[in-house]
Amino acid sequence: MKKLLFLCLIFVSLNTKAIDSNKLINLNDLNILFEFQKNDWNENVLFLIKKNSFAKVDNESDTFNLKTIFKDGEIITMPIFSNNIVKKIKFEYIYFDHKKENLKIIKDHFNSFKNYCFEYLYNDKSIQAVISKCN
Image (cartoon, rainbow, N blue to C red; front, side, top):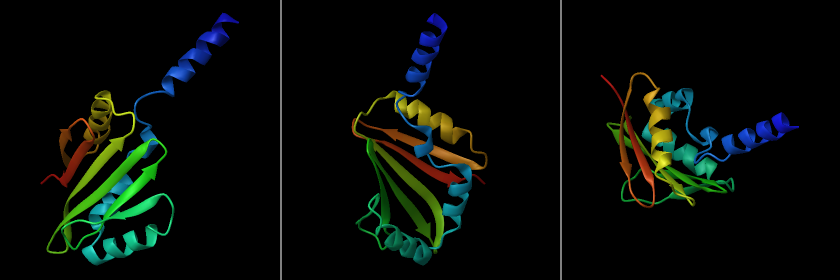
């Protein structure tokens, strides 16, 4: 009985970490994002905003930003184009239960991706990861 209770406590504690890892982009999806051209990106955003879990974020450029909405926060995906090619992608992670330990989880996740370079910005409202291909 004690072992069962101990296993239940471990399972519960593993499921209460700051960030659910399935909400972080995987390497295959990141590769696909870097293949987009500006028009294709904007068309896909317009298609996705028809679903309740996505929204378009207006900004000062001619490129749409995509907000993915979860029950515990949001992620804004902001591609940065140069000559119609994605040069960088900025993700802004906004969690309602924002904790500094989320930065370590995000860093560990992205730093495992080979051929990509990352910059991280942390403030009291969000974590931003700016991703580019390393040359």
